[in-house]
Length: 271
Figure 1 (tube, rainbow, N blue to C red):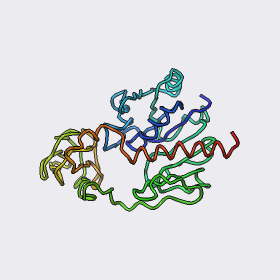
Figure 2: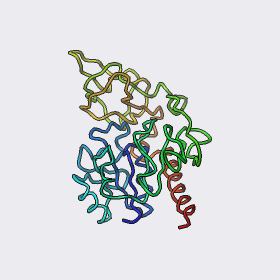
Figure 3: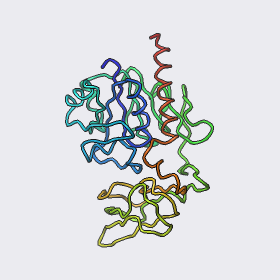
Figure 4: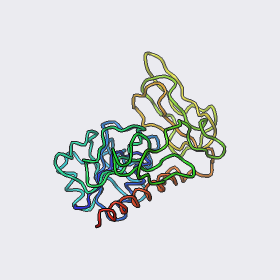
């Protein structure tokens, strides 16, 4: 437990880091909100909040009901998740490292005093001030670059390009309400097909597939979504259905950078 790593966030990008750190032998505790809104739920450990357990590729994660139970699970060699968005568990322990992988595009309270080593993914943090290191999350030449001083690039709001599609492959809620899914992750969908329905204020609004392809991700059925929220993601490459159920190239790249960053900080500290 002397090398315990806390990871804030259990979405698909965070899960790539969690998976890699655990595979490398580090004990890991995941902290999540009460109602996670991951889109790529088939590769997000955050689903344990709803189901009590989750599985990403060949790794299982168990929801703990208390900090003590979480530490028991970790002590038994398991991956544990705790609903603790405010990092209250830090009142009981000081981890070896803390990784902010919420990807909120802003700092939700992470600071260097939380752990011996602190790393944050994406914009909203300044390396050397808020945290020790920042990892670039923008796709392109600098994806995964370790930033020792300064900030990551600001969010452009433009999704990564896949087979000629970028913004048009991502679907946002046209109105607020409760989402009822009509298609499942991994399902082949056609442009214009209803993949979900949003019910709110006495009205019903169909959510249509923006392009044809594989439904790569869709927000969990029954969640209340605000207008404009990202709720689904389609991969235009119909033959890439298996990618819906494996950690993405971007998530693995970020994970490798986090691991390298931790080793750098250990070397810097002369350990």
